[in-house]
Length: 361
Image (cartoon, rainbow, N blue to C red; front, side):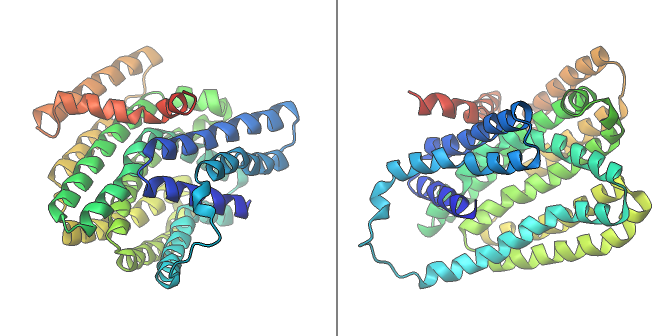
């Protein structure tokens, strides 16, 4: 699994370095496609349980490894020589950065596991999974940030790097907000479909985590251009601070507030990281936050209303349509984007679905 993961990420790096974004997205989409397809077969048909999930995770990358190795075979020449010193040093910094980034989102579940029942952990896990679905259509924007910002920065086109980062993050947050409102409106039905009626108790945690997802996603979007301009050391320092915040808060919040305490823990930790990343992005990229803050404030306010408005399905569907119309119209009235830009955002958000069509032309 580790070797396949290394190979898969190497292929993603090559595709991104060559600016082959359609192949990059195709690899990502196909990985999830194979994972779901193989996983459903092993779990539902063969009833393999946990071992089936492990086999599915490994198997999903095997066909992609062969496809990628065949496409980029020119890079596997044993005679190629390079100075690996700078690569290893940067790799070590990124490895430390990624270790902290991997541990941080799990601390909420660790503290729940220590002090709470299995039932509470299960409810929280379901809520976290459901809230995370809304981030899928933000992926295309996040994936294109690094190469363009990095290239502009290395050419000393600092204004170009700023504009690209700022506009792309704004578009990603708008796409995210549209789908967050959808999950917020139909959270009850989504829980029933994916997890069953026993998990309806997780509904308050879903709404809390939708707010956390907004903060996490903003931080993750700022993460990409900051890595592109090689600010990994400073970013790691803020991650450590966020990690300490999570540990300190987890000792008090989770035992008292249970699942909602874990929500508050995660949100506070990523708020600290977002604050630090925002300072770094302003310092090194001169990013302006006016339109970004307005977008999140508008979406956050509507999401809060969705959480309060718990009526029947028909009423919530009507409220969802009104909220989306108000959100999109508010963006145009506030001059955050134009209607033409909204059309572009919708087109880019659907890129993961188009990647399969591109691959099988």
